[in-house]
Image (cartoon, rainbow, N blue to C red; front, side):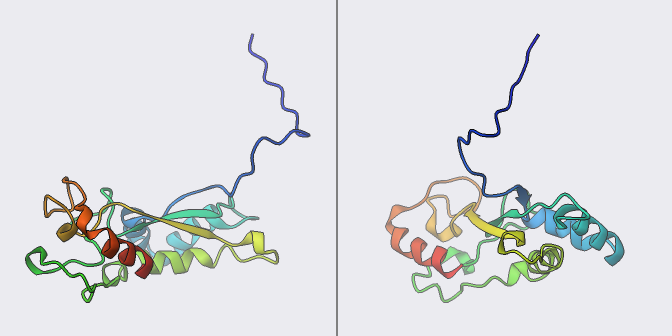
Length: 157
């Protein structure tokens, strides 16, 4: 018989929060719901009193492989022409679903303590296709000659 004992007086590590991700497909599906259903769902996820109180969400920098097609980066160019100055950088692809879902989720995480808020962290899925050996968001490897520009790309996000 397996017995698990918990000693709450001993701490091994701290948790930053409990959460999930607000990547493109999740946001797309949330924004397809009618407003009442979406609000009920967001409340159930984020509200610390009337829901489960998730307070940590991952965002993707550009598209993830879970997104509805077409995949995108924040600096897509015609024919994958290099854009070392990042003049084509834009988050406009996120305006339809991702940004509205993030904004809506914040409504249910407000509290009196700073700990009651929603914390976001972002992770890149793919550099822009023009920074890759395959010239594609799918597959290929990072072309290390763009390391400095990629750093600027991440900072711009």
